Every structure is written in structure tokens, then in C-alpha cells.
Image (cartoon, rainbow, N blue to C red):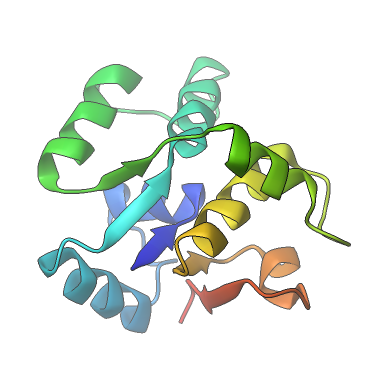
Amino acid sequence: MIVLDTHVLLWLDREDLALGPSSRERISTAWGKGLVAVCAISFWEVAMLAARGRVELRQSPESWRGDWLRAGLEEIALDGALAVAAAALAEFHPDPADRFIAATAMGRAATLITADQAMLRWPGPLRCSDAGK
């Protein structure tokens, strides 16, 4: 399974070339097997970015989310165990959403596709793949 970081989901949505060809292929292959997911917090992040005018969606965040879920993207819900795991990430940068996303990937033994250098360089047990490649 792979978990997409929020910006990767947005890049995928926009067919942004920032998402590298190797990552696109990996996502496409996993998608065909039903093995692509996001942490629920990513939908919150996108809704907040849209509300602040930092990203533009072609539809409401609710409709956008629904379209992705109907297309086969798995949403992994936040729960207490995930929240505690996110809080326990030693030496991880303090952004709460990134902590939830990392804990989600780790909890599913999934690879996180991200371009976030802090996550890619973190020496902890998170498996990451550079989205730009």
C-alpha cells in the first residue's frame, strides 16, 4: 500500500509535473490494485487551503473528496491510537498534519509518497518515496 501526502494528492489531481514519472507509475500500478490511500487529515488540509484561497478546486471540497473516494482512493480515518502514535514520533517536525500522515503510513506498513524533505530525511521507521522522482 502507498499513502499520498496532501500535496501529492493535489499534484495528482492537477496532473502537475512536479509529481515525477516514477511516482506516477508507482501510483498507477498501486491504484489498479486498490492500494492507494490518504490520511483523512489530507482532506481537511485541502479544504483549509481552499478556504484560504491558497489552492483552487473546481468544485466544493466535499464534492472533490467524494470524487476521489468514488474513484477508488482509500481514506484512512483518524482515531485515538493514530493520534497517540503521531504524538510519539521522536524528533519529527512539529506540523500536526504531517505527524498524522506519517503515523498513518507507519500504522499501515505503507510507503508514503511525499516531496517533504523533512519527512524524507527523518531517520525514523517511516518508509518514504520521493514524489519528485
